[in-house]
Image (cartoon, rainbow, N blue to C red):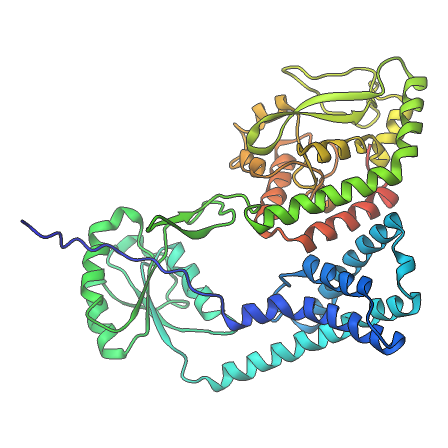
Length: 464
């Protein structure tokens, strides 16, 4: 029986570094610790409601953001914005549930004002310690890059720019001649692929990063066979340069390595956290605005003939068709194969409808969609089915935004892309913000978007 000597590469998922763990727990622990400290100082004992609030604050802020790479001012601004967003949500929840009376006002005020200070000091101290450790850890571990295309250059820059564990990149190896794309000033050519193993052995290279295209499989296997005779660590970087990576990660499928390129961020505990926050926020908000909903419904009926609610078909999670509710703001109710977006001074918009659209009050019934599980409070805004059919053919990765439930507000809307998108360029920009939201989702980002949305509704005079 013949033996199979084909190399079968094994993939390893690197464990999180100590720095990442510290960053994840640092700010949540300080926030909870400050509340416990102020309560014990002011009241002499810690009550059960205070312990519950500590757990809630820790849950809403964990994992914390890694701000060790930010400069002092950027870190301070980021901390204050995130903390203000969290306080705004806690204040609304406390008012709606009448639980503020369980706490002393002076204690909560001191906690709210002081907490960002030790958080910033801790981040600053961590940044200084990391820099000192980096300076002491000389010489830096050396690495080489195999493949001189754009991906190889990105890998070299990423290695040299790692804040906590920088790597000295000696140069690159490639034998593709005119395909070399790495500027000599940034990455020095050290030879062809056949020179890799001798160079690694002679210079004690610690890490080898292979960035060759997947079409070069025979060359990759030959290279692996030659370099495995050294002690260098081998890393293969999949050639997905130019692809929009959404929540990319390595997974194990029954012992088979699977590289996720485009995946929803809402899996496991993230999915639970997102759905719970949606249910809590939607329920509280609907309780608070119930009288307003009734008044608007009556006003819409009196202002013009037609129903108070407008139902439109939209694409939701995984592109499935859903029904979205809005207060009717137009005399017509277009929901066919062709839907014309509202424009400034649109004659179809009623007098009351113009006010509802400007203040986004027409969107309030969508909180019922959130309770139904069709939408989220925060996420990419749903477009009419007719618009999806058109833009999916014009904009790359357009339908990726449907990997999550659509939202009442979103990252694109708080960044100036609210309302009409009369050009493909504007829609492309909106989609880019939606994809950025999918890449970087966190509970803190959702809170930030909610706070910025409230500010826009109150002060934005450009909407129509």
